[in-house]
Length: 387
Image (cartoon, rainbow, N blue to C red):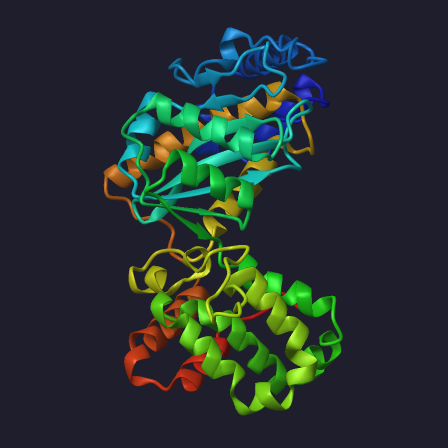
């Protein structure tokens, strides 16, 4: 509803496209206007934005779901200078406990004042990604992520994810390893080739990459290493850099390969063993995701961010508007879950993504019988850097 319009204008806009059949079951115009005025009263009774976390007192209507169930399940307290809030429901946490695969991400542009980010946890269920936990976090430090995950675990002791997909953020990775030591942390594949591309942009390789399709295809084979079985990645990397292309372009490619080893694979020491990379191989390897038909990226979570922003209509809105958006989203999620239980199908992937995934699955299924360089080249044909 456009709160800046008059009550009459709001009702007129609502009624402009309705058919005679629909109008026959609508309330009277005066009743519609009363509903608009009542909604405005609800908006106006929201308290002003607090000036500090210590002054943040949350009214009861923001502590409950739309159907009046407990919603704010954790508050670290006004005495905490790094205060954080967790919103979910008992049923949602029980559902999350049945999900082996979790997806988590934060958004900063939609966060309310006094908080650094909105952080959400989604569970893989009903062949889709469902938002089940909403949190307001004061920063993106390891201490905060650990406090958040510890509080979440305390809310339901049955929470034991097998995998958790995140951005390539070391603070989150370390916190997950601490709170859920048996959980395999996976990185969102989208950021893996983008990281390689950013390094290319900062080097002398960018112009050649943009103008030489064969050169770009050869470089994309570095990203294709993510689709090699984990135990064969190091050997495949050696095969790749000893190929004719990499040998002939060694001086030009040396900085890129040094970056790749330092960040993703680990540089060889004098004893021929690899040092620990910035991100472990288990975090960026996608072969198991492909063979198990699991998502390789957090696209479902990114899509949810767009939905949230559409509910907020603003960057850094008031905390009350954010919590109200959580309430609306939780209510919508509950309706969707009930639909899945009834057997309604989830919206399928776009055709082009289905075709892309099918091609990659076909290539991966033939790993054992395909020469390494042919395999990497085949995968690279199906990868794009965000040029």
